[in-house]
Length: 177
Image (cartoon, rainbow, N blue to C red):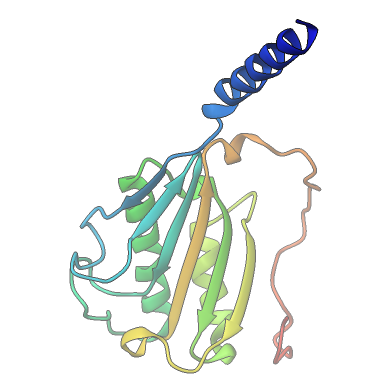
């Protein structure tokens, strides 16, 4: 009798544990807004898991086409970041929600020019970021940027250290990493 009660108790506990944590499983959504990337590409524009949005790498294309904007690194960087902003907004996020960016540059010597444009899009709390030189970006682009965004990220400043210094690198730095 005790054994039966114990087993029933154990089963009920396991079942309630499963029910209690079922809501914790995050649904995965594969998203394509059609506002930036052509719709026939073999990857998703973004994937949402819970409050996180994983944005595919963006380059400086004219929205809806496979044509890069002309004008060099600054114009490509500007269009790339505009495309990111458009894609984020299409999925209910904004630049303030971005927590991490990965930047790929066709020529790492264009780091300063890219940063000049980047700083005009992000302010106050910059996202975490990695950058590297790459040999051969899609469509011959000069820059590609992928981002991760999290809902609620702009309200949290815990752990941040206020700074007043300008975030630039000395002109003499060839490899600022």
